[in-house]
Amino acid sequence: MASSFNSSMRGGRGRKLKSEINVVPYIDVMLVLLIIFMVMPSSNNPSVVNLPNAEKTTRPPDDYIQVVIKPNGALSIGVQGKDPDAPETAPNREALVRKLRTLHDDHPDYPVLIAGDKDSKYDDVIQLISEAKKMGINRVGLATK
Image (cartoon, rainbow, N blue to C red):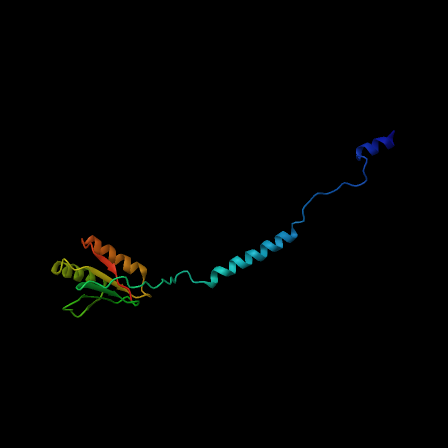
């Protein structure tokens, strides 16, 4: 009777099958992918944005106020057109905004064109557009090469 009891406890089999997945190769693949994804972002520089060149659509107006932004932060402003004034350099943004206000008061019909170099900061251009809109200048554009 003891022999029949032992065989019923074992289920009538000598060995049990194990149904497990071997995860070691999957871990190796995941570690390789992790290393690849950690190395790739360091190869490109996210602070540099290369904007595409725009084609000339129409010629600029005959008379306009031009604001030039250089990559080193130098700002200049002047009236361009039939009787151009020599552009004046502005030491800072506040002086440029004051000069823009006086030029706009003298020539309220002139549009404002902002010429930013491709290496100048995008924020500087956006801030100047915002300041011009706050002054009530409705015709603000970007000059292209």
